[in-house]
Image (cartoon, rainbow, N blue to C red):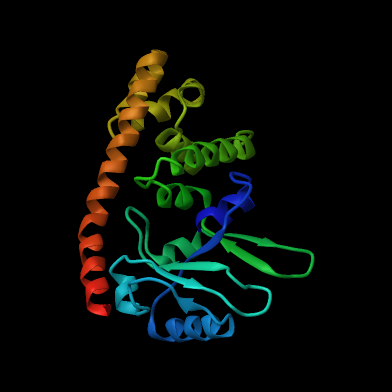
Length: 226
């Protein structure tokens, strides 16, 4: 997940760390500890590395020291705001293989878009690009799921207006859940841009609200470690 997944999809050119969403049951948690041990990965911040902590929605951060990975940061999560549980993410994943036979399992673009709906301003241009890439790669013979995704998540007035013109009946069906589709169908582009900005600000506020109790818990953990 995160920036490295965006690099694979072509929505980013560089990322300084690697973010993973993991299954935090006991067996897999033990395997994760083993992998981090081989990377000589040391925890660099609160919270502690604990499956219960992960299940509550915290991220745990590590810095690697093994040969070839020196200084690499790894962030591990198991639960994110508005994102399905691991089993569903895994069933929808994108798998990429290189010429050496190594496989890379990525969050699907729709799931990655949900994970990127954060309070950070830098994530929203990435969402915009991910949806555009998905549209460009699937617009010839789109599935019902793809059309639904585009109508719910397109972030530019031009693209959203184009999609609504192509699929007006689908847009009318979804419009009660995303009211700005009515504006897109009417062609009021300036108003649509303003409504998209307001939608983004609403999601950012939801993310701040989600993280507020987790931040307070992090402060308690930090004081406890001191």
